[in-house]
Length: 320
View (tube, rainbow, N blue to C red):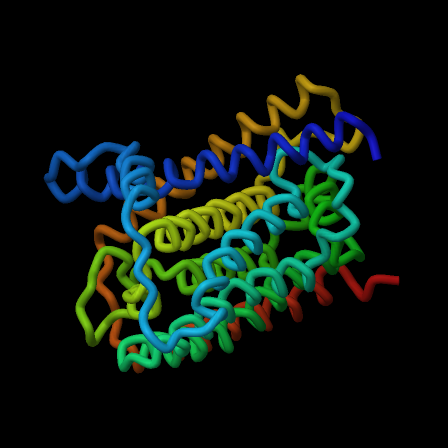
């Protein structure tokens, strides 16, 4: 455990925590421009969070500690995930904890906390959103495991840092049919995991189409700010992980110094920005699909991930 590694991890987490609202703002601004609107600016989410932090906190009658603590669990899960995944550096002292199964478990922890909070309110909308989110999560999490596992076969490890380091040495491991299938599956499940189009529309409050928004309708003030911040960090981390799994160049090596970590932060910031802009651009041309078609879409992504695992064993061979 080196001082440079600790500093790199702190810088990585701080960048995610501070830059996540900007990622959401940039996506909204890109969509606004492409739709012919001026848009509020990329800094609008920061102003929204500041306003929510000054609002009165209202707690529905009959709710329990689950409702009160769910926002903190969501934000904490996103922050811990940001500290163990390889975003800016491979020299994090928490690299050993950055196992594929640990990361998926942390993501699921935030999802379960939000589902329980939606149920805890006892409202029709909260229960409806929780039911839909549970259905989506049951299909998304196994797909993430399979898709990333396909990338772990050439590296012979389920540790994300090892996979990223392997890709920097052998780019052909991801520039392959197995890599292409895994990438397609991950894109679909990340869209579903973060509530983006065509699975969910983050900018609507229509009762019959809400998923994420239905579960947070009863939140207000600082707790709503924490939930929105946690959701932004979740999206930022997932975009960063996908970027480094397939385009890892620029990330600081295990023994990298301060300059290498700074270059890694700049590189991951650029990658996340490009990925966010691309996602926002595609969303302009998509419509939300019917809720009953979402399982079909996610089942298709699961099949792609399964094919990626099969192809990885055929192309690379059984790891020994």
